[in-house]
Image 1: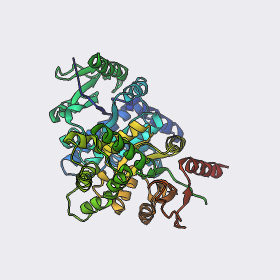
Image 2 (image 1 turned 45 degrees about the horizontal axis):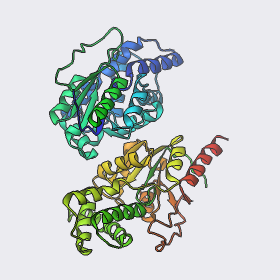
Image 3 (image 1 turned 180 degrees about the vertical axis):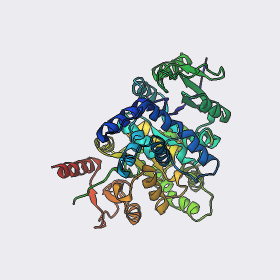
Amino acid sequence: MMITGVKALVFDVFGTVVDWRTSIIQECTKLGEAKGIEADWGLFADGWRGKYGPFMNKVRQGELPWTNVDALHRMALEELLIEYDINGLSKSDKAELTLAWHRLQPWPDSVPGLARLKQHFIIATLSNGNVALLTNMAKNAGLPWDTVLSAELAKAYKPDPEVYEMATSLLGLRPEQVMMVAAHQGDLRAAQQVGLRTAFVLRPLEHGPDNVPDLTPDPSFDLVIRDLGELAGEMIAQIHSKDG
Amino acid sequence: MMITGVKALVFDVFGTVVDWRTSIIQECTKLGEAKGIEADWGLFADGWRGKYGPFMNKVRQGELPWTNVDALHRMALEELLIEYDINGLSKSDKAELTLAWHRLQPWPDSVPGLARLKQHFIIATLSNGNVALLTNMAKNAGLPWDTVLSAELAKAYKPDPEVYEMATSLLGLRPEQVMMVAAHQGDLRAAQQVGLRTAFVLRPLEHGPDNVPDLTPDPSFDLVIRDLGELAGEMIAQIHSKDG
């Protein structure tokens, strides 16, 4: 498929660029060992992530005032610790554990894929994560963003259209000049509604080897790729075929 | 002077990081030659820059609704072309010339100084320039920002306090953990009012060799440095003296 005129690629981050589950399990396991707490940290990580959508919906529906993801992660953690009957964590332990989301590790293809794309396109986050989280994560993981764009700047959460509109407006581009890259079809369909191009990244292991989601892609997406290396290859080939 | 606990440095850009005057003169000269227009492009550049503050004040005072710097640069250019009686530019010439502000060249010390700082600190813009302008400039000039912060995100212009407050809030830091770096003392004094640390960069040639401003620094600034290399040296020495 020919995709011409794309100037910027904006990326969902949790699951698309970084492997949140493995990273969170590792940090929880380490803290559990230090504090003598035992739990199924895989289930715990899934539970923490599982509360993310519902907490954002509380903001979306006005049940909570604008609250950034750091604060939502912390509120979700408090609920989860009660559910798991874990009492041995101090206030500072909980603050530090919440920052585990700032230290998520990238999928192996992310840094080299982004570095290749950066030579030809503007690359930016477009995540529900807050600016500090995304900036610290990029620094820690070596993600070479040109800039960090976040739902926090629109005070709205994806898939609300304001978030995608904010991104195109701040980049000074028309929607069709911006491609949304995500491992989640709902995110891409919402971006499409606003006029962005779409690339669906297959991340079968996002939720662990026992929970592979249905990855049958919506046929309306502009690209379906296995990883960010393949995305770089496809997008750079488009430039060359246009020049040729 | 000991400055401990700084996590992020935020930079004024026009004049502090990039040499707007030389870049604008070059772009105007080139366009003038192509179109057969003669003018004193040094004075023209100074005139364009001179309208920047007054146009931002129109926004600040509510005479204009929120308008980003790309649009203000364009409005200022229209005024200036009338003043210089220059009629030979098409609409697309004027649009393209306005984008000269996206292509400003860095002072020679900027890229290496920022690269050293980036190894130890978060580095971000904190400019009145809009996000697209700053992002395109960074890409063109190789400025290695961790993220782009702009007055556009606060819908207020420096030196209004909201701009500095927005930066510390989005970075998730306390004001004293953020250092404002600027070649303009008014910018630094405003940052200081909000609680930020301050570094004054001496840029005697910002307005050209014939217009060296009074650079006697306010004694309340935390650092006075000749360039971003010296800034990197000072800030990295602070970390080591703290560790030692």
